[in-house]
Length: 79
Image (cartoon, rainbow, N blue to C red; front, side, top):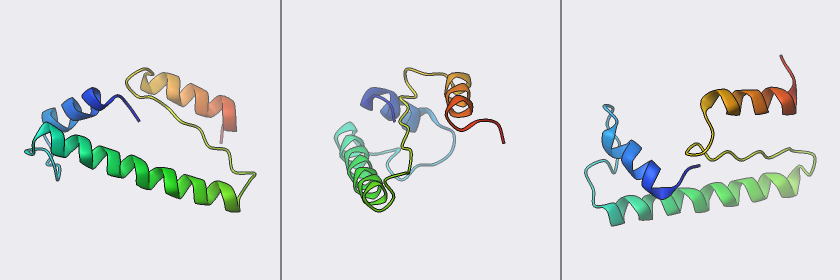
């Protein structure tokens, strides 16, 4: 995840199309909120059914790709 402002800018600036790219800020933020709510429900269901499942969250506006990769390697080890 990332801050709304970061995600909004990423959607607007990307070369590739996006379903809400040309929508208002309000519409994009509502879209992001619906996605977050859906993911929260999915993760909650997974966690309820698989208590051994390790859930790791990253704020991609705060961590670099390298930092995320290193954290994943630390958590799960090399393959």
